[in-house]
Amino acid sequence: SHCWWEGESSLNCSFTGTSAVPEDVSQNALTADFSYNAIESFLCPAGRNEDWRPKHLNLSNNMISELSLTACRNLGALETLNLDGNAIHNLTLDVPAPTCGSDEYRKVEGLLPALKVLSVERNHLHSVPRGLGLLQSLQTVRMSSNSIRHIEPEDFQNCSQLRDVSLRNNEITTIHPDAFRELSTLQVVLDLRDNSLTTPHLLISLNFFQLEVDLSND
Image (tube, rainbow, N blue to C red; front, top):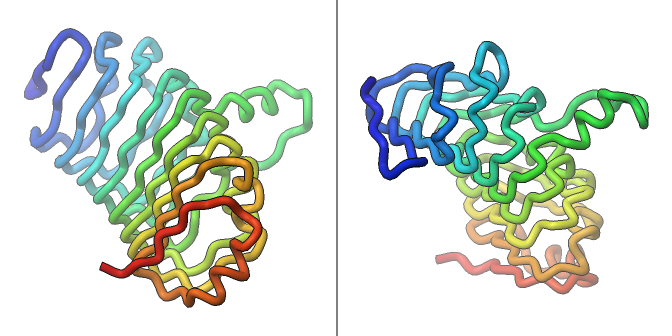
């Protein structure tokens, strides 16, 4: 009741004090802004209006600490997800591997098929969320200002569409030499500013990639 419409398809529920995303969001809300509230969790399908298929969802600056996207089967049209400024320490994207060819396998393959931008800046992540490779349309991932310490070889596995990766202002000390191997054919902007990396280490790790790497400390 405290939300308002900005045009025919943009619903603004920011600064309303709500503690949960309503279960009866109008299917007309292609853009939904729930930022600056007191939301602690977001449960994708349970009891929710499955006719609501937003393209842009803003949950930034709430109180979310854990979030699982593995059950987001009714968000097939979602293109951007903004989770900045929460308290997320565990973001679940992957699920136990099902048998190839099974119904569950096809469901996993279709996880958020349209998602292009995932932003999880200013949270409490200690590692890159597992399962980014399940997001087959993902082009931009922003994880600056977290507490990520290491980049492992599987962190960006199967992320064939990634073009922009921001890991600025974390606590990264090591990057596995194979961490970005599958990004080698793309024009990728990799922001590693304000970490604890040394330039020689980075050159060893990335010398076989055509990446634009920003290591400057402002």
